[in-house]
Length: 77
Image (cartoon, rainbow, N blue to C red; front, side):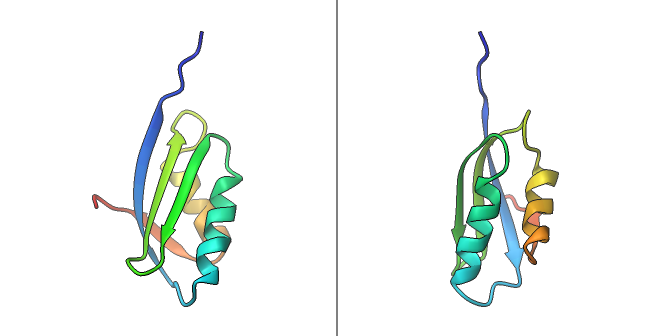
């Protein structure tokens, strides 16, 4: 039996210029293995991701965001 542990990661993003950025980032994150939920908050430039840390690391998430043209870094809140 395997148990999936979901990690809640919060990141701060830079470079948002329009609400369509939100959809682009959410789509990219949703394609990563183990990502259960990806929510981008446009007004606060905050990204929340629920994921299986064994399948997708925070570095993987940051890299996926960079791949679609934005900078993100882990945040405490």
